Image (cartoon, rainbow, N blue to C red; front, side):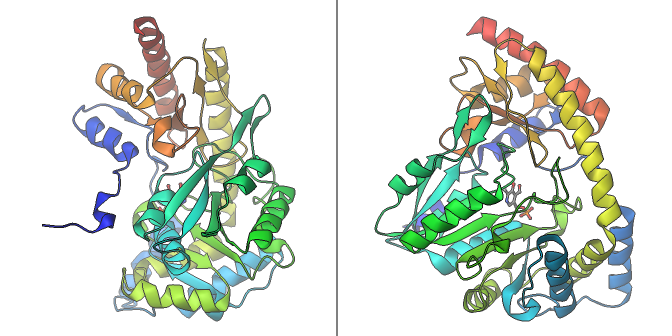
Length: 388
Ligand SMILES: Cc1ncc(COP(=O)(O)O)c(C=O)c1O
Protein backbone atom coordinates (compact mmCIF):
# COMPACT_ATOMS: atom_id res chain seq x y z
CA UNK A 1 0.00 0.00 0.00
CA UNK A 2 1.12 3.54 -0.70
CA UNK A 3 1.94 6.00 2.08
CA UNK A 4 1.66 9.79 1.92
CA UNK A 5 4.91 11.84 2.05
CA UNK A 6 4.16 12.89 5.64
CA UNK A 7 4.49 9.24 6.71
CA UNK A 8 8.22 9.41 5.93
CA UNK A 9 8.95 12.09 8.50
CA UNK A 10 12.24 11.20 10.21
CA UNK A 11 11.69 10.22 13.86
CA UNK A 12 13.24 12.49 16.49
CA UNK A 13 16.65 11.30 17.72
CA UNK A 14 15.89 12.83 21.11
CA UNK A 15 12.95 10.44 21.42
CA UNK A 16 15.24 7.59 20.33
CA UNK A 17 17.59 8.32 23.25
CA UNK A 18 14.57 8.53 25.58
CA UNK A 19 13.37 5.11 24.41
CA UNK A 20 16.85 3.70 25.01
CA UNK A 21 16.91 5.28 28.48
CA UNK A 22 13.64 3.50 29.31
CA UNK A 23 15.48 0.22 28.70
CA UNK A 24 18.25 1.23 31.15
CA UNK A 25 16.57 1.97 34.48
CA UNK A 26 18.39 4.51 36.62
CA UNK A 27 19.42 6.65 33.61
CA UNK A 28 19.40 10.36 34.43
CA UNK A 29 17.02 12.06 32.04
CA UNK A 30 18.51 15.30 30.79
CA UNK A 31 17.60 14.79 27.14
CA UNK A 32 14.15 16.37 27.13
CA UNK A 33 13.52 20.07 27.37
CA UNK A 34 11.60 20.06 30.59
CA UNK A 35 12.00 20.67 34.28
CA UNK A 36 12.25 17.66 36.57
CA UNK A 37 9.86 19.37 39.02
CA UNK A 38 6.08 19.21 38.53
CA UNK A 39 3.75 22.10 37.67
CA UNK A 40 3.54 24.57 40.60
CA UNK A 41 0.59 24.24 43.00
CA UNK A 42 -1.11 27.54 42.16
CA UNK A 43 -1.57 26.30 38.60
CA UNK A 44 -2.68 22.81 39.64
CA UNK A 45 -5.22 24.39 42.03
CA UNK A 46 -6.63 26.43 39.14
CA UNK A 47 -7.08 23.23 37.15
CA UNK A 48 -8.90 21.56 40.05
CA UNK A 49 -11.24 24.54 40.21
CA UNK A 50 -11.74 24.41 36.45
CA UNK A 51 -12.85 20.79 36.75
CA UNK A 52 -15.26 21.70 39.57
CA UNK A 53 -16.59 24.57 37.42
CA UNK A 54 -17.24 22.00 34.67
CA UNK A 55 -14.89 23.41 32.06
CA UNK A 56 -15.11 19.95 30.57
CA UNK A 57 -16.70 20.81 27.24
CA UNK A 58 -15.47 21.71 23.76
CA UNK A 59 -14.08 25.24 23.66
CA UNK A 60 -13.86 27.69 20.74
CA UNK A 61 -11.20 26.66 18.18
CA UNK A 62 -9.11 29.70 19.07
CA UNK A 63 -9.46 29.12 22.83
CA UNK A 64 -11.45 30.73 25.63
CA UNK A 65 -11.76 34.52 25.16
CA UNK A 66 -10.71 35.07 28.79
CA UNK A 67 -7.36 33.39 28.14
CA UNK A 68 -6.84 35.33 24.90
CA UNK A 69 -7.47 38.58 26.81
CA UNK A 70 -4.94 37.55 29.47
CA UNK A 71 -2.38 36.79 26.72
CA UNK A 72 -2.90 40.19 25.10
CA UNK A 73 -2.52 41.91 28.50
CA UNK A 74 0.77 40.10 29.14
CA UNK A 75 2.08 40.90 25.64
CA UNK A 76 1.37 44.58 26.31
CA UNK A 77 3.13 44.35 29.66
CA UNK A 78 6.21 42.55 28.28
CA UNK A 79 6.63 44.01 24.81
CA UNK A 80 4.65 47.27 24.91
CA UNK A 81 2.47 46.17 21.99
CA UNK A 82 -1.31 46.19 21.87
CA UNK A 83 -2.71 43.15 20.10
CA UNK A 84 -6.34 42.29 19.49
CA UNK A 85 -7.07 39.27 21.71
CA UNK A 86 -9.95 38.01 19.63
CA UNK A 87 -8.48 38.53 16.16
CA UNK A 88 -4.73 38.06 16.58
CA UNK A 89 -4.40 35.34 19.25
CA UNK A 90 -4.99 31.63 18.66
CA UNK A 91 -4.67 29.36 21.68
CA UNK A 92 -3.21 26.05 20.51
CA UNK A 93 -2.62 22.58 21.92
CA UNK A 94 0.99 23.41 22.85
CA UNK A 95 3.70 25.36 21.07
CA UNK A 96 4.09 22.44 18.66
CA UNK A 97 0.60 22.94 17.28
CA UNK A 98 1.17 26.69 16.99
CA UNK A 99 4.22 25.91 14.81
CA UNK A 100 2.38 23.26 12.83
CA UNK A 101 -0.63 25.49 12.08
CA UNK A 102 1.69 28.37 11.18
CA UNK A 103 3.49 26.13 8.67
CA UNK A 104 0.32 24.58 7.29
CA UNK A 105 -1.20 28.01 6.74
CA UNK A 106 1.83 29.53 5.00
CA UNK A 107 3.75 26.82 3.08
CA UNK A 108 2.79 23.81 0.98
CA UNK A 109 3.92 21.64 -1.90
CA UNK A 110 6.35 23.46 -4.18
CA UNK A 111 7.32 26.01 -1.48
CA UNK A 112 10.38 26.18 0.72
CA UNK A 113 11.15 27.67 4.12
CA UNK A 114 14.50 28.74 5.54
CA UNK A 115 15.16 27.40 9.03
CA UNK A 116 17.99 28.65 11.20
CA UNK A 117 19.71 25.68 12.79
CA UNK A 118 20.78 24.04 15.06
CA UNK A 119 17.10 24.04 16.02
CA UNK A 120 14.64 21.80 17.78
CA UNK A 121 13.91 19.33 14.95
CA UNK A 122 10.12 19.67 15.08
CA UNK A 123 10.13 23.02 13.27
CA UNK A 124 11.76 21.63 10.10
CA UNK A 125 9.56 18.53 10.46
CA UNK A 126 6.40 20.71 10.59
CA UNK A 127 7.52 22.39 7.37
CA UNK A 128 8.05 19.01 5.71
CA UNK A 129 4.73 17.67 7.03
CA UNK A 130 3.11 20.71 5.36
CA UNK A 131 4.65 19.45 2.10
CA UNK A 132 7.35 22.12 1.76
CA UNK A 133 11.14 21.91 1.70
CA UNK A 134 13.10 23.03 4.77
CA UNK A 135 16.36 24.79 3.82
CA UNK A 136 18.69 24.79 6.80
CA UNK A 137 21.08 27.66 7.44
CA UNK A 138 23.41 27.16 10.40
CA UNK A 139 24.17 29.90 12.90
CA UNK A 140 27.85 30.83 12.94
CA UNK A 141 29.76 29.62 16.03
CA UNK A 142 32.62 31.96 16.86
CA UNK A 143 34.69 32.63 19.98
CA UNK A 144 31.85 34.83 21.30
CA UNK A 145 29.27 32.07 20.89
CA UNK A 146 26.57 31.72 18.23
CA UNK A 147 25.51 34.50 15.92
CA UNK A 148 23.43 35.03 12.81
CA UNK A 149 25.10 34.95 9.41
CA UNK A 150 22.82 37.34 7.49
CA UNK A 151 24.61 36.93 4.14
CA UNK A 152 24.25 33.19 4.31
CA UNK A 153 20.58 33.50 5.25
CA UNK A 154 19.85 35.81 2.35
CA UNK A 155 21.82 33.62 -0.07
CA UNK A 156 19.74 30.58 0.93
CA UNK A 157 16.43 32.23 0.00
CA UNK A 158 14.97 30.82 -3.22
CA UNK A 159 12.21 32.18 -5.47
CA UNK A 160 9.80 29.67 -3.87
CA UNK A 161 10.75 30.53 -0.27
CA UNK A 162 7.77 31.76 1.76
CA UNK A 163 8.90 31.59 5.36
CA UNK A 164 11.90 32.19 7.62
CA UNK A 165 11.77 30.28 10.92
CA UNK A 166 13.90 30.54 14.02
CA UNK A 167 13.66 30.29 17.78
CA UNK A 168 15.01 32.83 20.23
CA UNK A 169 16.13 31.96 22.84
CA UNK A 170 17.19 28.97 20.82
CA UNK A 171 16.93 25.30 21.51
CA UNK A 172 19.55 23.75 21.61
CA UNK A 173 21.93 26.70 21.19
CA UNK A 174 20.60 28.81 24.10
CA UNK A 175 21.49 31.78 21.88
CA UNK A 176 19.23 34.86 22.01
CA UNK A 177 18.51 37.30 19.17
CA UNK A 178 18.97 40.99 19.95
CA UNK A 179 16.40 43.54 18.79
CA UNK A 180 18.90 44.55 16.08
CA UNK A 181 19.07 40.94 14.93
CA UNK A 182 15.27 40.90 14.64
CA UNK A 183 15.33 44.19 12.76
CA UNK A 184 17.75 42.82 10.15
CA UNK A 185 15.81 39.56 9.83
CA UNK A 186 12.63 41.53 9.33
CA UNK A 187 14.29 43.60 6.60
CA UNK A 188 15.34 40.37 4.86
CA UNK A 189 11.76 39.09 5.11
CA UNK A 190 10.43 42.34 3.69
CA UNK A 191 12.90 42.26 0.78
CA UNK A 192 11.88 38.71 -0.15
CA UNK A 193 8.23 38.89 0.94
CA UNK A 194 8.55 36.13 3.55
CA UNK A 195 6.64 35.33 6.69
CA UNK A 196 8.76 35.48 9.83
CA UNK A 197 8.01 32.58 12.18
CA UNK A 198 9.49 33.55 15.54
CA UNK A 199 9.40 30.82 18.14
CA UNK A 200 9.50 32.49 21.54
CA UNK A 201 8.67 29.60 23.83
CA UNK A 202 11.76 30.36 25.98
CA UNK A 203 11.28 34.13 26.04
CA UNK A 204 10.81 34.16 29.84
CA UNK A 205 13.83 31.96 30.54
CA UNK A 206 16.55 34.57 30.20
CA UNK A 207 19.56 35.50 32.31
CA UNK A 208 19.57 39.22 31.70
CA UNK A 209 16.28 41.10 32.00
CA UNK A 210 12.67 40.06 32.20
CA UNK A 211 11.99 38.83 28.69
CA UNK A 212 13.90 38.19 25.47
CA UNK A 213 13.52 40.78 22.69
CA UNK A 214 10.64 40.07 20.32
CA UNK A 215 10.13 41.17 16.71
CA UNK A 216 6.56 42.08 17.73
CA UNK A 217 7.81 45.37 19.11
CA UNK A 218 9.32 46.47 15.77
CA UNK A 219 7.34 48.86 13.56
CA UNK A 220 5.90 47.08 10.54
CA UNK A 221 6.61 43.62 11.94
CA UNK A 222 3.05 42.64 12.76
CA UNK A 223 1.89 42.25 9.15
CA UNK A 224 4.32 39.37 8.46
CA UNK A 225 5.26 37.96 11.87
CA UNK A 226 3.90 34.83 13.51
CA UNK A 227 4.86 34.26 17.13
CA UNK A 228 4.71 30.69 18.44
CA UNK A 229 4.37 30.51 22.20
CA UNK A 230 3.88 27.93 24.90
CA UNK A 231 3.07 27.55 28.58
CA UNK A 232 5.21 24.40 28.70
CA UNK A 233 8.60 25.83 29.59
CA UNK A 234 7.80 29.01 31.51
CA UNK A 235 5.28 27.39 33.85
CA UNK A 236 6.49 23.76 33.92
CA UNK A 237 3.35 22.69 32.02
CA UNK A 238 4.82 20.43 29.33
CA UNK A 239 2.15 17.75 29.69
CA UNK A 240 -0.83 20.13 29.66
CA UNK A 241 -0.60 20.91 25.94
CA UNK A 242 -1.36 24.58 25.83
CA UNK A 243 0.37 27.29 23.84
CA UNK A 244 -0.64 30.05 21.46
CA UNK A 245 0.18 31.90 18.28
CA UNK A 246 0.05 35.61 17.57
CA UNK A 247 -0.50 36.39 13.91
CA UNK A 248 -2.14 39.01 11.68
CA UNK A 249 -5.96 38.63 11.77
CA UNK A 250 -6.41 36.84 8.43
CA UNK A 251 -3.69 34.34 9.18
CA UNK A 252 -4.93 33.87 12.76
CA UNK A 253 -8.36 33.04 11.34
CA UNK A 254 -6.87 30.51 8.92
CA UNK A 255 -4.92 28.88 11.76
CA UNK A 256 -8.07 28.81 13.91
CA UNK A 257 -9.99 27.08 11.15
CA UNK A 258 -7.16 24.59 10.60
CA UNK A 259 -6.97 23.73 14.28
CA UNK A 260 -10.50 22.28 14.04
CA UNK A 261 -9.08 19.53 11.82
CA UNK A 262 -5.92 18.91 13.84
CA UNK A 263 -6.93 18.83 17.53
CA UNK A 264 -10.06 21.07 17.54
CA UNK A 265 -8.68 23.15 20.41
CA UNK A 266 -6.44 23.06 23.47
CA UNK A 267 -8.00 21.29 26.49
CA UNK A 268 -10.35 23.66 28.35
CA UNK A 269 -9.09 22.74 31.82
CA UNK A 270 -5.50 23.40 30.73
CA UNK A 271 -6.57 26.72 29.17
CA UNK A 272 -8.04 27.92 32.45
CA UNK A 273 -4.93 26.82 34.36
CA UNK A 274 -2.84 28.71 31.77
CA UNK A 275 -4.93 31.86 32.31
CA UNK A 276 -4.21 31.76 36.04
CA UNK A 277 -0.53 31.07 35.31
CA UNK A 278 -0.34 34.25 33.21
CA UNK A 279 -2.07 36.39 35.81
CA UNK A 280 -0.45 35.06 38.99
CA UNK A 281 2.80 33.60 37.66
CA UNK A 282 5.25 36.53 37.74
CA UNK A 283 6.79 35.71 41.18
CA UNK A 284 7.13 32.07 40.11
CA UNK A 285 8.94 33.13 36.93
CA UNK A 286 11.42 35.19 38.97
CA UNK A 287 12.15 32.17 41.18
CA UNK A 288 12.61 29.93 38.13
CA UNK A 289 14.96 32.42 36.51
CA UNK A 290 17.14 32.50 39.64
CA UNK A 291 17.15 28.70 39.90
CA UNK A 292 18.05 28.24 36.24
CA UNK A 293 20.80 30.87 36.53
CA UNK A 294 22.36 28.84 39.39
CA UNK A 295 22.14 25.62 37.42
CA UNK A 296 23.57 27.22 34.32
CA UNK A 297 26.60 28.32 36.35
CA UNK A 298 27.11 24.84 37.83
CA UNK A 299 27.06 23.31 34.34
CA UNK A 300 29.32 25.99 32.82
CA UNK A 301 31.86 25.74 35.66
CA UNK A 302 32.14 21.98 35.16
CA UNK A 303 32.22 21.89 31.37
CA UNK A 304 34.90 24.60 31.32
CA UNK A 305 37.28 22.34 33.26
CA UNK A 306 36.84 19.37 30.90
CA UNK A 307 39.45 18.76 28.21
CA UNK A 308 38.21 18.93 24.62
CA UNK A 309 35.01 20.74 25.60
CA UNK A 310 34.11 24.26 24.45
CA UNK A 311 30.92 25.65 25.86
CA UNK A 312 29.18 28.80 24.58
CA UNK A 313 27.53 30.73 27.43
CA UNK A 314 23.75 30.31 27.31
CA UNK A 315 21.86 33.61 27.28
CA UNK A 316 18.40 32.04 27.42
CA UNK A 317 16.51 28.73 27.69
CA UNK A 318 17.70 25.96 30.01
CA UNK A 319 20.30 24.18 27.94
CA UNK A 320 24.04 24.02 27.61
CA UNK A 321 25.26 22.99 24.23
CA UNK A 322 28.96 22.18 24.40
CA UNK A 323 31.10 21.35 21.40
CA UNK A 324 33.19 18.23 21.88
CA UNK A 325 36.49 18.14 20.06
CA UNK A 326 36.76 15.35 17.50
CA UNK A 327 33.23 14.03 18.10
CA UNK A 328 32.06 12.65 14.75
CA UNK A 329 28.80 10.94 15.72
CA UNK A 330 26.97 12.56 18.61
CA UNK A 331 24.12 10.04 18.44
CA UNK A 332 26.56 7.16 18.91
CA UNK A 333 28.14 9.00 21.87
CA UNK A 334 24.75 9.68 23.50
CA UNK A 335 23.83 6.02 23.09
CA UNK A 336 27.13 5.08 24.72
CA UNK A 337 26.45 7.47 27.61
CA UNK A 338 23.08 5.83 28.31
CA UNK A 339 24.34 2.27 27.97
CA UNK A 340 27.63 2.69 29.83
CA UNK A 341 27.13 5.63 32.22
CA UNK A 342 23.37 5.92 32.64
CA UNK A 343 23.18 9.55 31.72
CA UNK A 344 20.82 10.64 28.94
CA UNK A 345 21.64 13.72 26.84
CA UNK A 346 20.38 14.87 23.45
CA UNK A 347 22.74 14.35 20.48
CA UNK A 348 23.71 17.50 18.56
CA UNK A 349 22.97 15.84 15.24
CA UNK A 350 19.27 15.71 16.23
CA UNK A 351 19.13 19.47 15.61
CA UNK A 352 20.04 19.77 11.95
CA UNK A 353 22.99 21.35 10.21
CA UNK A 354 25.72 22.68 12.45
CA UNK A 355 24.57 20.38 15.27
CA UNK A 356 27.03 17.52 14.82
CA UNK A 357 29.92 17.53 17.29
CA UNK A 358 27.74 18.92 20.09
CA UNK A 359 25.57 17.45 22.84
CA UNK A 360 22.69 19.20 24.61
CA UNK A 361 22.18 19.01 28.34
CA UNK A 362 18.99 20.36 29.94
CA UNK A 363 19.90 21.86 33.32
CA UNK A 364 16.30 22.34 34.48
CA UNK A 365 16.70 19.40 36.82
CA UNK A 366 17.23 19.21 40.55
CA UNK A 367 20.73 20.23 41.57
CA UNK A 368 21.83 16.78 42.82
CA UNK A 369 20.73 15.24 39.53
CA UNK A 370 22.61 17.88 37.57
CA UNK A 371 25.82 17.37 39.55
CA UNK A 372 25.60 13.58 39.25
CA UNK A 373 24.88 13.86 35.51
CA UNK A 374 27.95 16.06 35.03
CA UNK A 375 30.10 13.49 36.88
CA UNK A 376 28.77 10.69 34.71
CA UNK A 377 29.19 12.74 31.56
CA UNK A 378 32.81 13.56 32.37
CA UNK A 379 33.67 9.91 33.02
CA UNK A 380 31.89 8.93 29.79
CA UNK A 381 33.58 11.61 27.70
CA UNK A 382 37.06 10.64 29.00
CA UNK A 383 36.48 6.96 28.25
CA UNK A 384 34.84 7.58 24.86
CA UNK A 385 37.61 9.90 23.69
CA UNK A 386 40.26 7.39 24.62
CA UNK A 387 38.41 4.68 22.74
CA UNK A 388 37.99 6.81 19.59
C1 LIG B 1 12.05 25.78 20.43
C2 LIG B 1 10.81 25.06 20.84
N1 LIG B 1 9.64 25.43 20.31
C3 LIG B 1 8.49 24.83 20.65
C4 LIG B 1 8.48 23.80 21.55
C5 LIG B 1 7.14 23.16 21.81
O1 LIG B 1 6.70 23.22 23.10
P1 LIG B 1 5.32 22.55 23.49
O2 LIG B 1 4.74 21.87 22.31
O3 LIG B 1 5.61 21.63 24.63
O4 LIG B 1 4.46 23.68 23.94
C6 LIG B 1 9.67 23.35 22.12
C7 LIG B 1 9.70 22.20 23.04
O5 LIG B 1 10.72 21.60 23.30
C8 LIG B 1 10.87 24.01 21.76
O6 LIG B 1 12.03 23.66 22.29
